[in-house]
Image 1 (tube, rainbow, N blue to C red):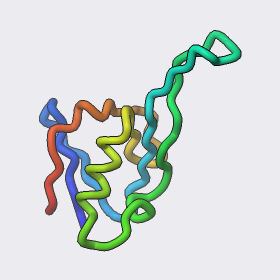
Image 2 (cartoon, rainbow, N blue to C red; image 1 turned 45 degrees about the horizontal axis):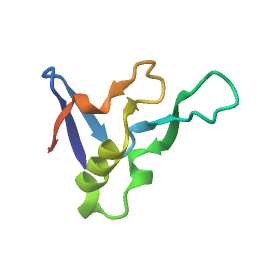
Image 3 (tube, rainbow, N blue to C red; image 1 turned 90 degrees about the vertical axis):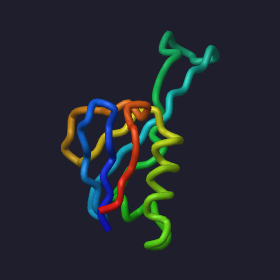
Image 4 (cartoon, helix red, strand yellow; image 1 turned 180 degrees about the horizontal axis):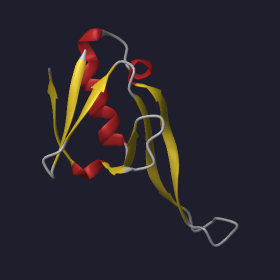
Length: 93
C-alpha cells in the first residue's frame, strides 16, 4: 500500500503502512476555566495501519481522517504541522 497526499502548493507527501500520523481537531470553549479558550484535541495518533480495517479501505480511511482533522503531522519526528485544508487530493501508487 502506498498513497500520496497531494497539496495545493504542488508538494506530495508519501504515505505507507508504517507512516506515523497525528491529527488534531480545533476546539473552542467559552466555559474554559482559564483564558485559553482555543485549543486542539488530538483525534488520532499512530501508524496509518492503526486506522484502517481492510486493504480495500486505505484511501477511504485517510480521506475520512483528513476530513475530520484541522491539522496533521506526518512522521513521528516531524516538527511541522499541515493544515488539512491544504490537501488537494489523494492518489494511489
